[in-house]
Image (tube, rainbow, N blue to C red; front, side, top):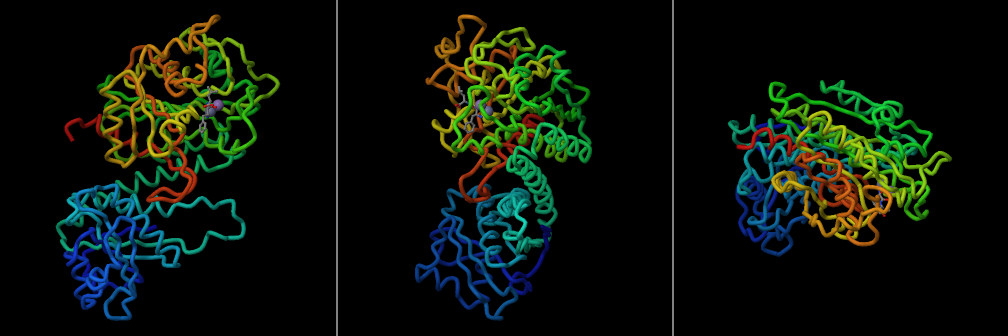
Length: 504
Ligand code: BES
Ligand code: MN
Ligand code: ZN
């Protein structure tokens, strides 16, 4: 979809649809909505008086203008209470407005920059939110439908109309940033939505290589033999049950090469299919485990955004990619594996595989001198039980870094909630035969998983994001659609931007 920013008189714009907005409780609309109301001889204020338009968030009212003004239709989008308004409301409203039009076969529109007026967003923020919300909300994954069922009415053109010529450049800058965020997020969504027979570890590596080539990132990949040679026994233990070659994918961005200590490592779980291994999962819903590489996908996407927005910080992205299969060489419950840092793990349940592959990836990141680590993983079903699908659970050993993640999430609209890592939980993963066991039983399952990871961060500042709930959505809502969300790619990129410029 093309997105233009223009100074136009919206009452004269020849477009099939114009999107304007309204805060709840407003009786006499001002700004762009007021100008349209006047040109339509009070049609909008009449609907407000009659109680048909309330301005509630999510409310959409379509008016046909019957040739009285330039736009053939006016869509009035409710923004909710002015006091509750933020960039995320602008994103959600933009998505829902365009999805509404698209369902009616309308493929182009003019919109105001929601929030740039009474909403109090800067022109950049508003342009960014409208672009991001529009692109993400119109996302579809339909490449395997051969009958063209959902391929109709592709939205082709959105024009953001701005009265003040002095603000056009700023809005354009915001649109470029929003597009970078949204396009990378859609790469992550595609990777997660792809079936596991297509999105293999090799295909993930190939996707990362393309991203690296297009955006000038460093790219390396380690194969099973490399990993065995480096003593990554925990990762290999998981990979050995599968015939698909495993890949440890590394993307590097050098935004501050003179200061190597100014760094950030993003480490993603990339289980391209999780059968559970010998501790086989039940059949019901097992197909959802094609999405067990969502953490890795979000890392590749975040690296693309970072390459485009160019923060002054060095960022390394790693994806620990393998299947978890119950093949003839698969590891067995009771096996003891040795990770790269020498620590041993008793594998009680082969379905607790994410923490095993991440353990070695974290060791490798530490060996490469990374001192600030964020790992992202669809790690535990317990996370979905605890927090549902509204927010990502965050744990770690560094409250400043955890706070930075939560703050970046407030900017992107992705929500995070911290869980504790009290020492009392540690005994749950004590093993009789090894340094630790890979499951802690029924209690505090997300926390015991994080406590295992902590054994491999070797004193670095570290935050762990369990995205088991937030990596997919059950329905279209706001800028999310059913299926993969791409989360938390935008927050990871925002985090890198904030760390690079703590004053901003
Ligand atoms: N990939 C799963 C976690 C998961 C479950 C993600 C549901 C998304 C939705 C993970 O590898 C897993 O199987 N975890 C086990 C751990 C248990 C064996 C200690 C789980 O949560 O049941
Ligand atoms: Mn598993
Ligand atoms: Zn898994």
